[in-house]
Amino acid sequence: VAGNRVDGGQTIVADPGRAVGALARMAEIVGPAHAIADSDRQLPYLRELRGLYAGSAALVLRPGSTREVAQILAVAHEAGIGIVPQGGNTGLVGGQTPSPDGRQVVLSLSRLNSVREVDAAGETMIVEAGVTLAAAQAAAERAERLFPLSLPSEGSCQIGGVLATNAGGVGVLAYGNARALTLGLEVVTADGQVWDGLRTLKKDNTGYDLRDLFVGSEGTLGIITAAALKLFPRPAEKVVALAALPDIASVAALFRLAEARGHAGLTAFEFMSRFTLDLVSKHIPNTRLPLREPAPWYVLIELSSAEPGGLAEATMQRLLTEAADNGIVSDAVIAASLAQSQALWRLRETASEAQRPEGGSVKHDVSVPVARIPDFLAAASKAVDAACPGARPVVFGHFGDGNVHYNVTQPVGMDKAAYLALWGPMSEAVHDVVASLGGSISAEHGIGQMKRGELLRFKSPLEIALMRKIKAALDPKGILNPGKVL
Ligand code: FAD
Ligand code: ZN
Image 1 (cartoon, rainbow, N blue to C red):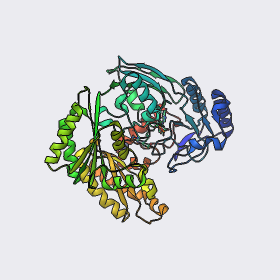
Image 2: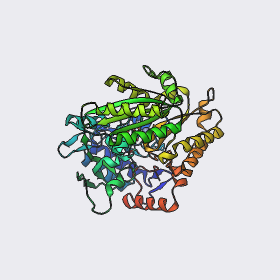
Image 3: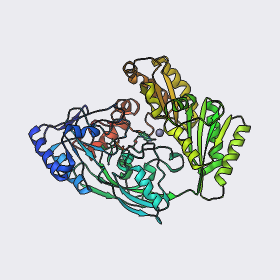
Image 4: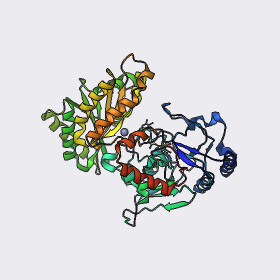
């Protein structure tokens, strides 16, 4: 379509009549049961769960096969219609939400939900984009293998969305993020061709790595329809402990000690501030701090061992005793049962949810070099207080990855909307601190709509120009998730 362009995040279709014809053809491809035009039925696809982003759509399509996805993309490409891929709709940066102008089409991948193959001996599996993360983990489990990616949203988020955002979570320390766990992909290109890159090779140095380019591209370069994923042996034993620490320097010291004593068996090292756990105890039912005294910081440590016989537990005992002797840890508890392990994990996993009853929260998902976390926290706290005196940082995250979820809850009694109006200046101030320490403004959630402007502030003009060239080469008409990332 002449005049089709990407402008301010919206695909502009020059010829509305032609667009209507194209929409009808797309609806035909999936059949009437799976083309949703009714606005009430569209609603779950148009807004994300926190209500931060909402849009509208010309159509919501639920294709049932890679072939249907390819046919839809061919029509969209020809007519210049923006396509917004969507998985479990759990993304936190507005990447899966269509624009408000009602011209874009939401493409839900949730019906592509087959596990195509699990190769236990080769430690790989091939799953379709709409398989939930929990279902992918269960498929691995049935073959007595481990798919180690783990997020609090795993019951809803889907492999396509997880890969498109290069999700992280609590297993990254030992097993890597989504990209590190991806061996191959099947991708539908902007013009409706199917790239079969479903290789299960552990080594493959044959030219530019398209797989790594599509992973983390947030639906802006291609539609992921299936993935070949890496599996691992299941640990024979896991042990979880919660430790209380007097200051953030002790958290850093405990991490170094846990790495030294736990080696590859250190499968999680999550930290939480006292205020974070106060909110969890206050707002989440059936949570209780299993320690004698409150402390400024808490760490959840998980050690795994490949062999049975109590090795992980013995290592944990020694580690915590040594830490206590060194004054790094003031108190600790080791879970004695699966139920106790789950209860400790619940304290960490409900940290986000626990902020909601306190009003507005300005969220930062940032990373800095691990050793700079204490510097980051000191400087960010000053920056936040300058932006909004009385605002309350809720600090937690994946310490071992240098990934801090630096969420800032509104001051007590402040109007929520007035507080959220400070989102821009506050996050700019926090991101400036991140940049001064050589960090990243998005550790694991992506850019989406939320951080598009900030991306331009922190990437060099050359890096942005190279990204734009890649986008133009793979999606010359700008129909793939317009207005996201770039
Ligand atoms: P969606 O939200 O549907 O989409 C996310 C992005 O991917 C969008 O840009 C969308 O256009 C694109 N996309 C979706 N499917 C495809 C596809 N098939 N092909 C191409 N592009 C596609 N994230 C973490 O990294 N770590 C965490 O610990 C974590 N915890 C979370 C906890 C909660 C309670 C919630 C709500 C979210 C959390 N997230 C976390 C964020 C989110 O769950 C992850 O980003 C997840 O990977 C998104 O998957 P989804 O299927 O819901 O994707
Ligand atoms: Zn996280």
